[in-house]
Length: 437
Image (cartoon, rainbow, N blue to C red):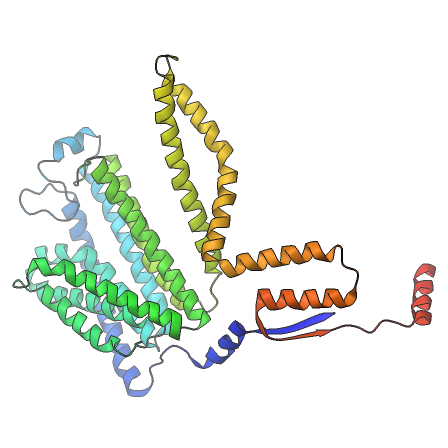
């Protein structure tokens, strides 16, 4: 017995094979590829110049204008009291920044190597290189070499302009819907204008909010109407990377505000916070590079499902744990002398007992809410398996099987072939032959 079926998704994927990334040919390729490579080479060269300057900046105490993460006069006493030295701090943070920028550059060069004949490949390589380098080296370069103010400023503007265009054309390099090219031009103009001294600071936040909302609207339209199944997988990878990075960075910022921690470097905890900040931020270029370069993406739905389940489970268990500790300490007050230890032990045992039931419950809720088709298919197959144990009529089994395939896979066509039963005499000869063997 065999079943042949072609799902609607497979048909769409077959029809979408003609839609590929926007490829540059002829005159455009001859002009744009050398221009992008030249800008990338210039950016990397400026980064090499900025590396020793940045190490020296981190190893000195500033008195007036301080660079990013530089020790100042107010924090030097607490910094030394923690046991840190300026030489160790400069080596650690400087090396951390070098690896951070190097990750951007390596991903950009790999994309350039694989996709240098496509719009999205050149744009992404240019965006990652300029954004990663200028975000860390611009201030150090302009403070040491004021003559570089104009080229560094132009590279910063290029990085923001590429970011604006990238969010409208990802993942195939085409603008969609039709209004996005004009909106992208307006956003680039406003990006350039926002760096001018006469631009009102009060308008920066509304402009950024409007820009984010427009890019989200464009990407949602592209995902639902235009994108192929493979392009939707690419979008999911990037969304997962950006969302995880923003949640991690937001969690670090919230922790600093809740605990009233200082914003300047004071000790080993500050180094740990800086490290985690860079780790979360690196998820963005990694997800972009993986989505663009990989032709066959892993099943991102499985990753998203696990993130939703275990992220929700961790948050819920942490909330239950602290609530139990607080409640048990209040209850045991005056009964036990070491009420803290008793509350911690009982809370830990309760969390261990609740882990598996909560995980299964959250898994079912997420499957029902976000993966409804998969959830329904599992239920249908489970019901069919239970029916199959008691069904002896071949015609009924056939009808049940076709119904299950139709409900779970939703194919455009279904065909079922049953092998003709063997004649009794032939079947007896086969059985006799097998018995003799």
